[in-house]
Length: 174
View 1: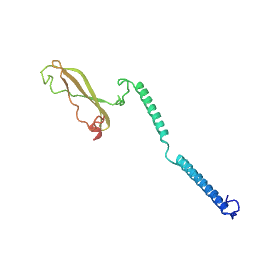
View 2: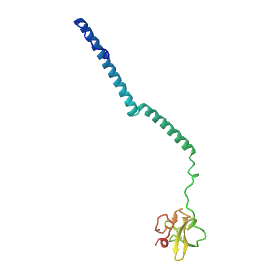
View 3: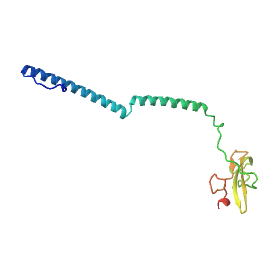
């Protein structure tokens, strides 16, 4: 309507109808502007706003089912404790000379009942030592003994070491 050249009618009745048409057109344009603003806000929120919660919830449900399936297959594939490979140290090479030291408990008789102790096995610990000019290995043998009467277990304690559960001896470090 703004495109037309504006000529106002002279008759008051025509002037009222002309005004009513202009007001109706302004109202229609205001409704259209509000509708377009609402659409624009929706598009901006979709493009730049936080992602939809429903899609996030669907993905969370999918991840949960995938985790449960992976845990089930992992449980099926786990070997028994006896079958698992435990990390092992490489042995000290055989070409290094060895000195054997046997640590025995103080007495040959049981401290509780006085019965005879018998040997049922031994624990061997190897320590690498350095004597000037060469390396040696100290083999510390601790026999496991048990009483034949009361079946009490006896074993000499391991001497203190510079590095707990380590291989180097005091001469190698000091």
